[in-house]
Image (cartoon, rainbow, N blue to C red; front, side, top):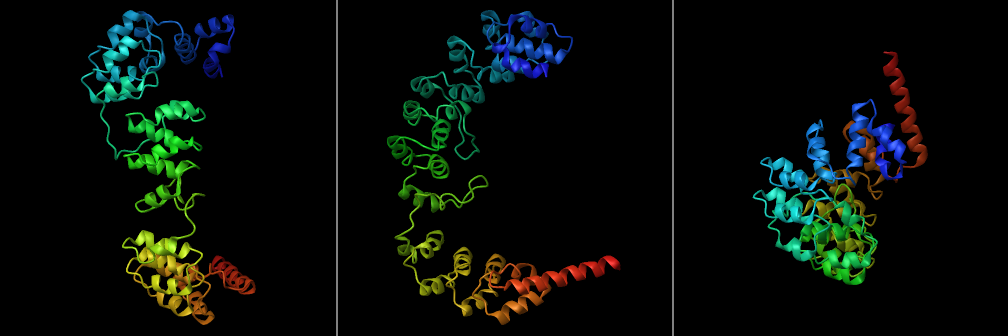
Length: 348
């Protein structure tokens, strides 16, 4: 509890701060010391006595002499930790911006206190295919339209990606990000921003099928086109052909056509359509793709005789029992049989 209290250092009265700095517990004294030196420069002797200096490197205000020494430390890990310290002086930031190590310069390039001209001058290393998370300081500015305009034109893709994660953005920012050269910026805009434009959502759909955090985007986005999709029924890309059946003007004939598509994902989309003919539903039960067969077993257009056979087969019953066409009384009987079988097995 006393360690937690140190996180509210500025809210504590001077006597309480003094008590925490003199606490008998090492962890409490260290937490108090780090909090104290967020505002008061930390001298070299205090830094040297710390059991673990990394947090001080990352967050504390350091004395000019100590800071000048550390930014030229021979240990790259020290400089890397120091590069993100928000209390670092402008001179030290400039020194680290010229560091021989790429990852040190890369950390400097993401500092919130740089203007975009300074950021563009840093030779940072960036892998566009790497995983990226929203920068907390950019997220904190999501509600500031002027900040979003300024950061949307940043030379650093991670900053533009973090802007694209905002739920709402000014129209000019959306327009700019929708044309961004970094396709991950466009992807994040499609996943997170309610203002993402329809044309860009379609473009993203051509190469993205949803992530763990946003499994239905961009297709479930409120701005995703709902009409005019039938024109993709003959598109060379299977992903676009899948969209055709979402068009309200599509017909059972279109479902039948796509149920014979060469791509399994397109056949899967047809297999879940309630306009699928009973004959095609039965045919898809023998599809070479297991996930297409599974979807076909759940299609309510399956003839009752075929569905009964599926329920009677141990290999297919677990999937077939989820078919919505099964009458509730039949489900009750299936459940009763299963319970009785389980009770008999328990007795044995």
